[in-house]
Each structure stands twice: as C-alpha cells, then as structure tokens.
Image (cartoon, rainbow, N blue to C red; front, side):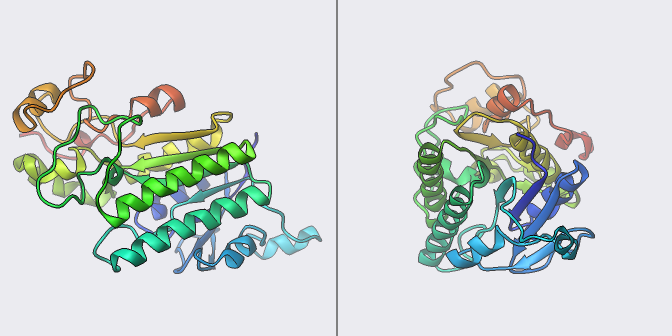
Length: 299
C-alpha cells in the first residue's frame, strides 16, 4: 500500500515534534492534530480534542491545508493515522483523568480510522507497560530481555491505559483486517538531552525504571516510517528503543550486578539494551542512527 497522506495526533509533543519532520523529509504529507500548533513550515495543525469522537471523525476527513480546496471535492480519509496524543505520564493530571483521556482518545482515533476505511494505524504505547517505571517502591522485572511477549503488569494509571490501548488496537485490527502497530516507546531523548547521560552512567540504579534503555526522538521517527512501509502484519507490538544499554559494562555483567536473581532468558548482545529492539530490527529493518556513545565523551 502506498502511503502519502498521514494524520498525526500529538505532533506538537516531545516525541511528535521530531517524528513529524522526519516523516515530512521522507515525502509524506502530514496534518498535525493537537491542542497546540506545531511550528513546522508546510505542516498545518488542526486544533482538536481527540477525546471527542465527532472531532476525531472530522479531523480524519478534513483538508490538510488551503490547497486542498483546489481539488474540487471534500477531503477523504488519510492513507494512515499515527496516534501519539496523550497525557504523557503520571503526575500531570489526576490518575482517573490520565486513564480516561488516554483510553478514550485511542478508542476514538482507531474507531474513526477503521470506519473511514483507513487500514494502517500506528499508536504510541509505552515502556511503562513493563510495570517498573511507575511502580510503588522497589519492583524487579520478571526476566530479561524485555520483549514483546512479556507479561506486562503495570500498577499505575498511565501504564494501565497503554495496556488497554494495545487491547483496543488488537480488537479493531481483527475486526477490520487492518494493520495496527503499537510502539512501546522507551524514554524519549531529544538531541539536546545527551548531556544527561554522564549522570545516568554514574548512577546506574537511577535508570532501572527505564530498564537502562532509551529512544532517540529522531530514531523514533524512523521506526514510525518503517511501520508505515511494512504491510500485512495485522496487530503487532514493537519495542521502540535504541540498540544499546545506557551503561559502560557489558549487558550480562551489568544485569548480574544490578538485578541479581532476575533470569535472563536468551543470550544477549554484548551491549544490548535490556528493553530489546530485536523485533523491530528483524521485522522492520530498523537501524539506529543515534547511539548515545556518539554524543557522550568516553571516560
């Protein structure tokens, strides 16, 4: 399927403002749907509330810009939808609002896309589904590496909303024979944030909640692009993270030291991220461009 026109929800957010330019550079036409405009020439922002089903249906059937009126007919549905809009973590809104907004917005977006004939949707899930990021107190992962068949068990409203969203995506993908891919996005690192990494390396326990992993916002853009290009997979979950552990020790040695007793279920690459992107590499052909070691001076 040739994809040219994309509706992207949440393109003004931390991840979206890097992913949208990447998609534009790949030749896609993008309409950003958000509560705040995105300052990117050539990309219009439609101010819309994705918790309102009517606004979502409208957003998916609107012109991307004034030039659309030259076609002489109302706008049709896009070729694909990328849904990143959400309350991005706990402790921003009350827990019930975080859960409610994230779940109903995802339902609205997927439902509208499916009923309008869109057969490719990418949604933002989260590393928090693995249950440790926003856990109360000390909690160990069940096993390493964290892969897509892991028994996810978050105890917070945000992670729980993402688990529900994955189930919503699976249900609609089966019902409409569509491709809906959920990205379990790791800790998003923007280009200017690599100055944080020396502190990460100096204090390994501080990164346990992120499974000593991350995703460069630009590499996330490439994963989204690859998902848009890969057809016929139905419902899928992909860990959206970079290749390597945020530590100087080899991964197996590091995990033995900092997570003793947690089983390792397969051989690990020397510096493989504990939150593994193996499926994205093997299925989508993902190749990272922004390994943290390029930006952090060696000690």
